[in-house]
Image (cartoon, rainbow, N blue to C red; front, side, top):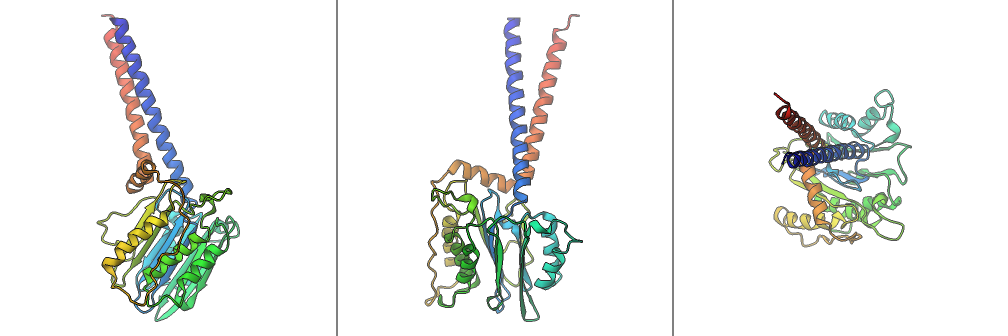
Length: 349
């Protein structure tokens, strides 16, 4: 009987130790994912202002399983920015602060690419569009150390900037800009142009890391679109965490989709949500071309992986990693207490 109890104790100890190691491993994996992804934010994006209304918006996508929306910063009536490639919360915050101060696009790019501000400027990428006293200014920057294809393009007439890195080709950026600036699609609004531009970028190949040499094309794992009205507060979402639906600063339009690697192209679901949103928030337009631009379909759905990724992005990758590591520590402590008590009970009086 004593031998049986000892066997049970050993089994419990092994199970607790195994669970502890599993949680620790998961925590470190999540932390590593968070750290790696923070150095590789959204590979293609489009940012723009509607000069007539002061609305600002952004759309983007990436082959990283975290919310791509953290690349964008919106200041309604003043400007919008994209901070990507090897981005950090530090340089994103700096760009956001400059936007809120009313700094022009060219000046924002000059400040954040100065070597006395950032010694790693070669691995950064930025886009900025600002509206100051009725004047539109667009600017971009792509560091020379970004992975090919990488570049940025602007069109001041349409108050838009498109940028990307680690792309299939230059057409990802140029086609996005052309789709946004199209003059033959009727009186569409800013959200419509952003949605079409993102689809055009995906149709051109998108992020090459989500594609294969055998012809498979997912083009991204995460995609988003956001637009803020002039009377709304500035908005930027924390890295690796989706904003709460109750966030008072949430823009008029905010849709974010995350898929598993090798799963469907997230732009398909993004378009579905966008069409539903538009039908409730923007009047019907008889002369508008609102048709979706066809994009590669990607692979088969992976619902379990997608559900896990969405939960992690709601919690936040960093907090999820901390929780797993703390859980592993608690399990180890519980194991030690169990062994200590067992040893005391077996000690001769």
